[in-house]
Amino acid sequence: MTRRARIAVSGDPTAVAFARDRVTNQIQAWGVQLGEEKLNAVELVASELITNAVVHAGGLITIGLYLDEDRLLLVVHDSSPEPPSRQITTENDEGGRGLVLVEFLATRHGWEPTAHGKKVWAEFVVPVSVPAARGGLLHERLRAAAPQTFVHVMPERFALAPGM
Image (cartoon, rainbow, N blue to C red; front, side, top):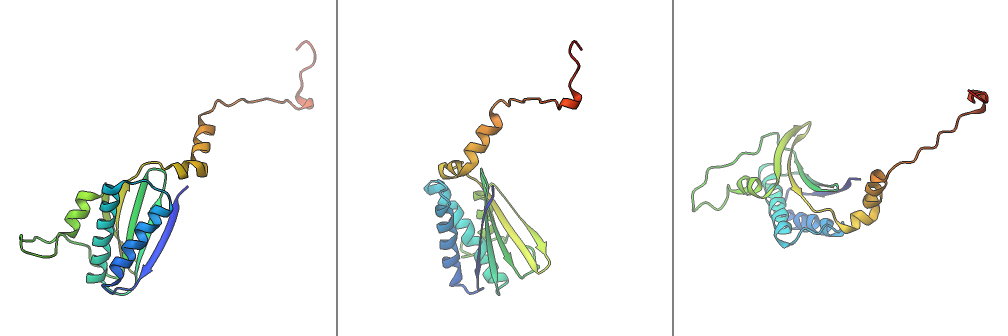
């Protein structure tokens, strides 16, 4: 079962903190136990991807969160068709390191063009949470692993004559 959430914000710089907090709150509402270090990594990646969308695209920005049993996918949609690019920076530059951080912190990341711009995504491996297991995942896994007993019932019309 994949859980999904969508957050829409304006391309205003003040939207970055709001969107990042919504991402964090949604992950916690799902009961995902990331630990402080991984949660900080997700927050930083969300901030970087949303900031890039604000700076380079503006307009409406949509953040999608997708959680399945062992991964969290963060997808940021914006209206710019331009691919994201890593900028070569000097030690004194204040920006340009965002995609380097995403590359370092996310398990996988990438981007894809869309009909109205692009989507930039980052994926994180997450532990299977106890609430997810209680929500049916554990039950499904146990049922799938249990030995199956099949009872074959033959309709009367196919029954063998005695002695056959």
